Image (cartoon, rainbow, N blue to C red):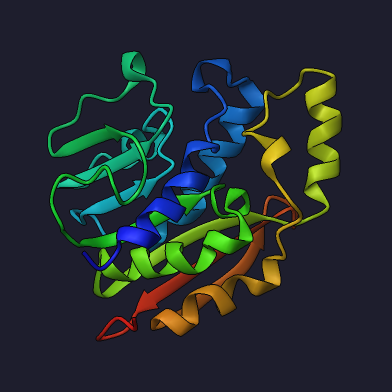
Length: 211
């Protein structure tokens, strides 16, 4: 089993990501939907998408043209998940919870990477390479480091719930390409959004995954 060790390590960080989606406040939702709008142009209609950290399935609700897609989160909001044909949700850890080995056209991780412990990043990149088709897009959003200070204040005054901000450890946004390029991901886009407070990265998977 190629990923027996890697999957265990990836599962560790995913389980800490959930913040309780039922507790999300208006500003949380606004920022979530903004991230989805920025990512959407890189998702082709009809694509099969793996959303890692899917929360309440908002991405699939905002982009209802997807097919044969999967959302994974350890803290799914089962009562509010969108009931859409061709979309399946699994409560658990990537990639362990996927019932069969398969690949996707697009993998999405919005507001997720900054929660991943440094020692698990290589395993995450390998798992993404194994589950993305050649030529497929890996779409990631990562907040700029100074945003943590802003979120702490907003959370203190209860303007936001905060997507598990206590799990951030000062992830260096500039290191994002160094995590994925060695796994045969080619950088396509890096741009800032949300007034410079967030970063969008888009990578394209090469013709063969590196081990």
